Image 1 (cartoon, helix red, strand yellow):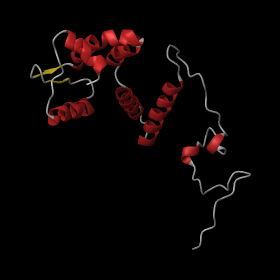
Image 2 (tube, one colour; image 1 turned 90 degrees about the vertical axis):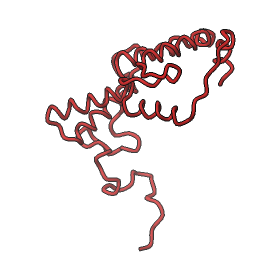
Image 3 (spheres, one colour; image 1 turned 60 degrees about the vertical axis):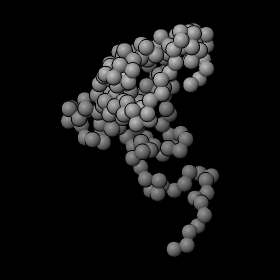
Image 4 (spheres, one colour; image 1 turned 30 degrees about the vertical axis):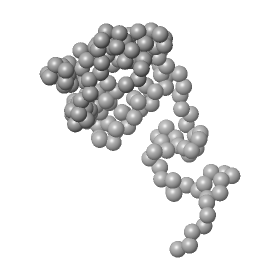
Length: 171
């Protein structure tokens, strides 16, 4: 355990408990399977506990260190994730919404990726992306709004001007 986290525990005459790896893997599996909705096993209590309760306990343990390192706001952002859901929750909701409107699986997946790109390009505290990708630049020079680079075959076009197609291959 990192000394910065264990020091407050030592001051209170407490320590981290060591649990068998299979128990830790069980909670990891639960998190992967159910996300933050179903809770986790609190091994100290021997009971299922809502994730939000475990997170608050972790905040209590980290509060002093987070304040010292000036990252209390970043740590507290985990509460925002609890409130609005994880990225996986939003991705699944977007996918299901497009499918419910009659969209194809491909259209639903494209909508999810588009939303991820928009989230990634949006700065914290703003509501609109700060940068917009330019069509016709980079490795997708022949992409158009109707034909993005992900839908074209790299073999269907000659190499871009000034680029060598690569070594010749013998058949």
